[in-house]
Image (cartoon, rainbow, N blue to C red; front, side, top):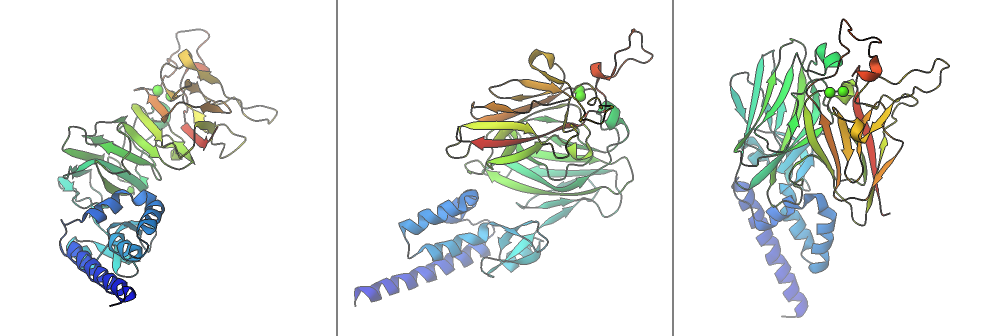
Length: 398
Ligand SMILES: [Ca+2]
Ligand SMILES: [Ca+2]
């Protein structure tokens, strides 16, 4: 037999082995080959992994690629996130197929967990979407028990809107509907309310064996949410560093406080936003978003709103930093604390890891009423209509 035929036979054997592994893996939900696990963990660097496998063994790469693809995340027909698997596996897990994946060998499967309003609704499948109840219920409680080898979960608020109540605008408290996280070890957040659409959270199990998400719905309004839950393995490269509530991996991006969509700052938050240093990047620059210039409402954390220029010029905020920030502030690691009603034009830091620390205390400072002091402290000495923050970052090599 010539060497050419030998290669042909080897490739054929490899194809059969690959098909057997694929079928076996899909037939058993608990089964996971090392290559599947490895690929799932390195999904974020898929193109790099592809290149490495390809250069190591060019003949077998397409086959290995075919085997490993079905365990990955996919995009559904409606643009949301699903998990690629065989059609039967999806049915068995109570999911709904929405589009195909893995060269039409798999379906993009979505598992929905609708709030029952009747005790804990337990999340068992990675990639589950948590949804609002079909009719009004006062209490929704989701439980996410820790599965073997899982250290962290990521929540994506694909959409999220609950009532913030009239108190939030003035006092920063969620006095109507609330969203509360229990069992996570890495942050203090809220309770939260309002519009969290587009936000994400990484929650560490730490010593806990269960993370709970509680929603108290006091207002009978049209609350809506779609939160997807991703379970992250302890040894996964997708895991956020311990202690980071938010983790951004892109070279540049936008970070907003919770409920910034409603431009209302919420009380009682103490968390860390981490930015992954991209290869060769040594410096990070933070700026206000300026999504709607010339207003400066994208950073009001303490004091009142920026003074409006009667001549029609841009509103002028009060930038404060360092020891002047005692109640609500953000801190750029390696630089300073910032508060007031204006963020500096630019803050750069070469301290790694790249970190933004967020601290909002338990209340908003109101001028005493009736005012015993003369002159009465104006908005500049109280927290009035604080919006929270929207900041954008950019990583650069130097
Ligand atoms: Ca404030
Ligand atoms: Ca405050």
